[in-house]
Length: 210
Image (tube, rainbow, N blue to C red; front, side, top):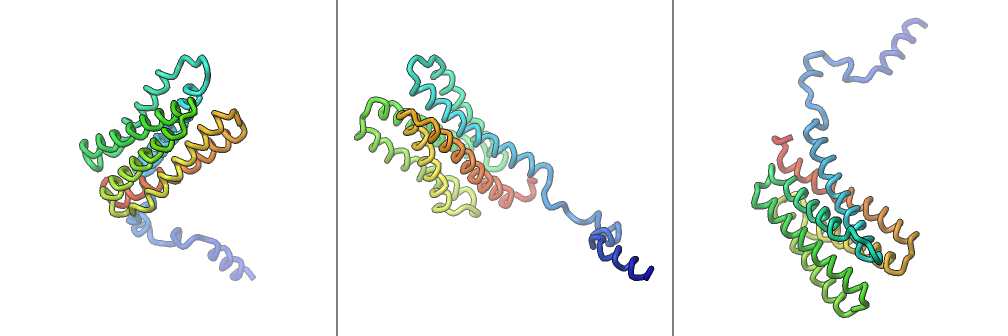
């Protein structure tokens, strides 16, 4: 009976605890602190992108709002921060190019907000085409830089994000606050998935840097 009890306890002990100390020390951790730091910071930057975009929509569509200029400046700063975050891996030129593409995305979005506010449907449609062209350029840039990211996959992620921003703006214009809350929540959820897809691909491409 005593032998059976001892055997049962041993079966409950994880195999890695039974390994020799030297082997355990030689095992590489599943994820490094530098990887966790990069992925968390990258995710935070993209969450900020969603939230400051939403804040800008609020300022731009609210009569008498006085903070539109300041919110736009903060939103554009976020695009610089995202570009800077990839410079340690892809270099300054690539980081600056990403910032340029992201700022163009914001400028077009701002023009769409103004056109939608004034009921210029034809202009909104034209700007929307430009917005998607910018997303195509961004997808091509990201996928060309990282072989672990397919162009079509990145494009789908960006297109979905554009749809969610459009939902946010549409709900704001008709003052459907419940729908707007849903669109912002969905935007945050989606952007986390997109940020993680990109950051995971960066870590996979540059394992020695993490």
